[in-house]
Amino acid sequence: MALSVSFHGKYIPLQGVEHIIHAADILRREDISFTLIGSGQTFPMAKKMAEGLQLENVIFVERVPFEQLPGMLRGFDVSLGVFGDTDKAARVIPNKIYEAAALGRAILTADTPAIREFFTDRENILLCRRSDPKDLAAKLLILKDDAALQTRLGEGALRLFREKCTPRVIGRELLAALEELIRRA
Image (cartoon, rainbow, N blue to C red):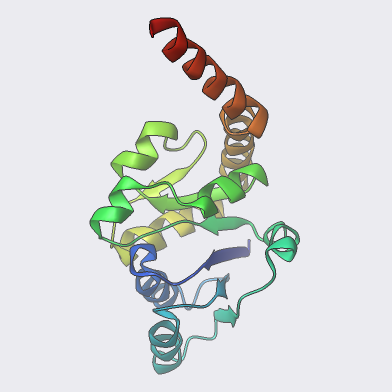
């Protein structure tokens, strides 16, 4: 079974795009394609790295209008998160994770304390070790060979998004917190 993988972002160091490129190199003989959408700080390095490795399974798409992104992402089996080893990478859940969850995509990202505060491995996300292209590649092979897991992760991510991340839910929680502050004052 083929697997199509997307990454979208501004190519900042916390995203660890170089690890995606190395994983693509490991998987060059597998039926797995990578589409990297966006541009930014590490984009030239990532493109040069992929060209130097002569990767035919990686396609670069420069930045697209945000309004077009959901339509593009729906066409992929898996959405990638972040894989960098910066302190910030361990502290944040990037927008791309919420965006993929809202679309019901299977998500693969690095295992960080921030991610584990909200997501559950193999329930609504698949986690790999940070800065580890071999583990990233291994997890992509698992997804390639397990369509049921892809579906379960996507459905779990969408369910979590609807339960905890919609503007209505967040607004209710904010209102409740404000009311509690007022009550205490």
